[in-house]
Length: 260
Image (cartoon, rainbow, N blue to C red; front, side, top):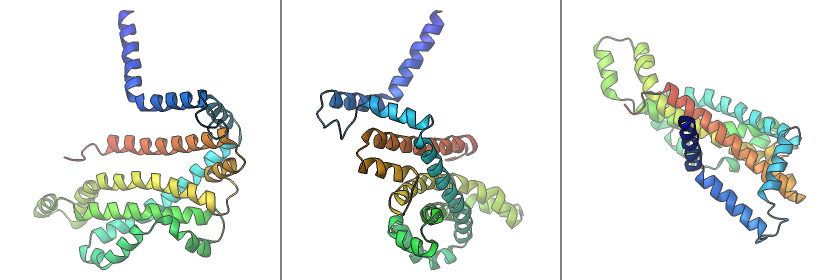
């Protein structure tokens, strides 16, 4: 009994330590709304917001918009990963080739993806794929840059050791370069999944969308349905956090040699 009590209190302490910031924000939010320091029309209470979140996710329109945005984000991410990893390996393996494209790489990497909306609308038209394409473009650049950087900075001593032992070039690539590059590749993938979600949300807001979390947030704001607007923002944050944690757990499980 004493052990169970100790275990329970230890678990509660761990939870409080890990979520102190979140609990503090919720407390401030509750105090502000309880004292009506901000107009209740503009800032609903945490209870009203989480009730709207629960009702929306339990069978309301919020759940459908959540899945549509998640689908678009993952669709864009898969395209970005497939193209970004291949191009990154190709250019990273040949430094001269990389240098010849360096200006274009830095130019597009420095250009905000949202500035490319008009171009993608002209090419792909108003529809789902234009949103997916611009998000894939933004995510692909991040993945490509990290993969190319990882390939170019593979530890030369390990490559030389493998070649001295007479290892074929293809084995050097798969057994040395590939595994050395994986930690940097996962950094690119984890950054890209967050970026594609951001671009998809913004695209849903401004590129003729009739559904998705971005459009839902805008619609709720325009009709002053503030509980639904804040609930949609929280749901979007949960989606981004969940995707990031999924990649972080995968990275920690399978890339256990990183930094060694």
